[in-house]
Length: 408
Image (cartoon, rainbow, N blue to C red; front, top):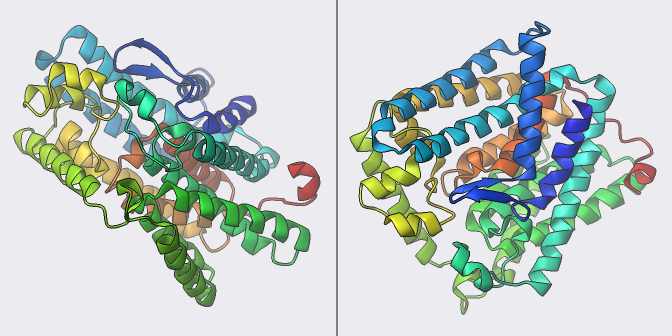
C-alpha cells in the first residue's frame, strides 16, 4: 500500500497528458490504474483478511451512493447500447477506486503517514513548475482544438489542459503550503523555503485567470486563517490578492478579462440543461454517469458533437450533475457523505495539521464545484481523499525535521 500511495502522489503532476483511449469517450490515466490497484488491495483486506473498516459510516455512505448510481443506470439502460452502458458504468468503478483511497490509510503505519506532507509538496511543486514552462512556451491549445480542448489563450493550465481545474489544484497546494509556513515560523530555513514556494504558487494561480479558483482561494484562506485566528494576516493577504488580481488582468483579451461574460453565459446554459434533465428524471436521475448520452437524447447535443467534446460527460455544477445523474436519492446520500466527512474533520481541526488543511480545502472546493465539476475531477479527488484519509488516522503535526535535506 505504501508503494501504491507513493505512486499515486507522484503521478498527480502528469495530469491528463498521458492517457490511453481504447474507444471514444473512454480515457484511462495512470492515476486511474493506481487507484484501481488501491481499490483491489482494500477489497482484499476487507473480504479475504476480514479487516474491519474503521470509518463504517463513511464506507456505508459512499457504498450507498455507488449503489444508487448503479440502480439509476440499470433503470435507464433501455436508453443505452451495451457499449454506452459499460462506458457509463466505468465512471462508477472509477469513483469507487478513488473513494478507496480514504480507507487505504488505515493499512499504513504512522511514520509513512507523517511523510505524506513532503511528498504532496513535491508533487505540487512539480505541477507548478511544469505550469510555468507551459505558460511561457506553450501559451494556448489551438493545435488541440480539433480534439475537443478549448484554446485557453495566454493562461496557465499545466498538465490539466484546463486553467480552471489547474487553478483549483493549485489552491489545494497553496493551502498545504500555508499550513507549513505557519508551522515553520520558528524555523528560519523552513520558513524561507515554504515562503518562496507559496509566492510562486500564488503567481501560478493568478496566471490561470480562473475566477472560480480565485473565489476558492479566498474562501479557503478565510477558513484556514480563521482557525489560526490570524485575522490581520488574512486581511493583508486578501488585499494583496485583490491588487495582484487586477494587476495581472487584461481587458483586451477575453480569457484574461476578469469581467468576461462568455464563460458565465456558457455555465448558465450548462446549468439550465442540467436542471431540465433533472426535472424529467427527479427521483433516480438518468444514470451515473450516462449524462453525455442524456444530453443527446434530450436534444442538447448531437451525436457527433458529443463524441468530440471533452466536457460533455458532465455539467459545470457538480451538485446539478449529481441531481441529474442520480436524482434526489443519490443527491441526499452524496450530501450526507460529505457532511459526515466534515463532522469528522471538525472534531480534529484544532489539534490536527492535516485536519486544518483538509477542512479549508473542502470549504473552498464545495464552493468551487458550483462553477466547475471539480469534486469529480480525478487529480483533485485524489488529493482531497488523501488529505481526508490521513486526517482519519493521524491528527498531529507532520515531522518536518531535516526538511532541507529531505527536500533536496
